[in-house]
View 1 (tube, one colour):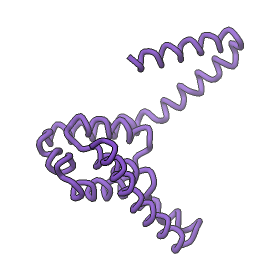
View 2 (tube, rainbow, N blue to C red):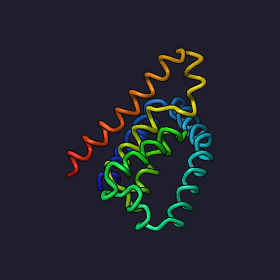
View 3 (spheres, helix red, strand yellow):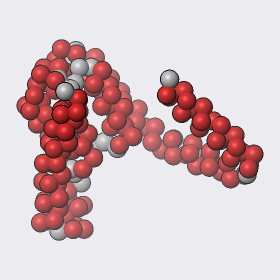
Length: 159
């Protein structure tokens, strides 16, 4: 229901914007469509990959590996996978929702998303070139540890 309300508000504001300044609104819509075109290949690629993985691995398997009952073992797996994966945020959140529907636990998904967003194993060489080895490693290690803090807080809130 809230999604419908948000879409309604968005359409209403778009109509107001259109009547206020047609050229700016058209320009903004063109930019938005261009951004969407640029994002779409990455988004579809990850969604197809996750869809294939969810079809190969049933909910029972996902539950065993990163479900609620997997505990800290599943949280560690999720955090490590998140740390070494390079997925943009706009793809990560729908992916997390798909994993939750597939049987993953909230604590494990919290660790996955937070390490995915904050830890950059793949981007480490670039980060080292800008900030130096010590700062890059320190930041990534602290971010990785913080992903467990996030997971624990989610565990406290959910359970």
